[in-house]
Length: 258
Length: 316
Ligand SMILES: Nc1ncnc2c1ncn2[C@@H]1O[C@H](COP(=O)(O)OP(=O)(O)O)[C@@H](O)[C@H]1O
Ligand SMILES: [Mg+2]
Image (spheres, rainbow over the protein chains, first blue to last red):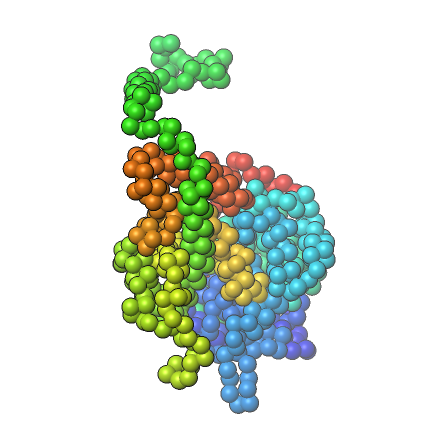
């Protein structure tokens, strides 16, 4: 169990988000301590991706607040008023938050190395040599040291996702978001990606992971949040929620997963 | 071989390597027909004296023709640069989500595509009749500088405006089509890495859109090479106009038109090769246009049956 003596890295309060008439998040609270791994589970359409995308402002929230590392995401407090941040400032906030997508979203016109150094060089103005050295280090770490010059299309799904993780890590984020990182993979490729994530968790990275991999969640996550219909139905240590859920909806969902 | 399929299935020594290709009797017939027609055409070209090949040869690289060719090339280049540059801006404006920008862009495309090219050229050429003076200054306030429109809008300027601004309208739609063909996940990945929209457009979206933009743009360049011949109506000495000047004097109309045709064919052939090279450059990272099945594979939601991929290789 994680006792939060220091301020948590992520604090989301009463977050609401609607698409037209469809209210997808109906007042969600979420806190993530530094170094903590939180999994978000729940049925399809429950708002997991939306919640994750609100954390780095890929989706604008309608009400509530999200703080990451003490910064109000997407907004700035000016006296007693709150003002929306301009695009530049939002981009700057996103640099501290890495994101890994279900569909990898690697840049197909760039090699593995090119994908990884693009943002450090272009956005953070790192010297190319330093950025490339770190990129090679990261590729080694995800087990793809020999794929430096490979274009994404030449890589298997699992390899692409590992490059995508390295790409996000190259910005030296303080928080990593994973949206079903293994759901688009063939079963035999899931393990290699989960292994990389396991190592990352062990290195102390703060992670919020949307996943259906219950075994991974039980083993790696500190806490689990169960989302259904846009509300948090149950939350607790990953072990509690996944092995002894108290809510009927959680139980029903987990029994379908097996 | 006339053995039945069941019999064949049982024979392990069967090997399709070195199999004879499928026969195409109709294709052979068509080829013969085309060759005969080509021979007849060639015979006519050589024997018909009205072509006056000696006249064609003597004018083909004459200085006045070369100057006309230079004008055609320059107009094509300038109009295409304006067209591509302005076209990208208009396409981005149209897709910006800003209602004012989007409306202005749509209005531009609507207006310039509606009016015939020739009319636009004549309009720019005669702009002085509408606005005798052009000036720079504060709207409804003092002027800082002003020019006589007739001295500013030379035939060259009218041609550049007429061809370039219309081209921008067509290019905007081509660019927009290219941008729309790029998966939205690419923009999201760029955003999540902290890139601004300008950088994301320049580094991530446009390079991928180029694969869809280059082929129709190639057609536009070829269209433009020929389209510049319209400027002969405003007495600008392009290739066609230079040829006309000569045959109006010598009455060797057909041979001089053939000179022009020859140059248009040569330019077209060069552009064809250049376009191929550009397409190959922008398809880097893709497995290759000749193997669309692998391209589909990358886009598919669940990349199942990936026979060529190195499954599990380098597993940590
Ligand atoms: N951009 C969008 N526009 C409209 N509706 C959306 C959009 N994104 C998600 N939704 C809707 O929000 C709901 C939750 O989606 P999502 O967060 O993706 O769920 P999950 O990731 O839990 O499967 C779904 O009903 C989905 O249709
Ligand atoms: Mg989802």
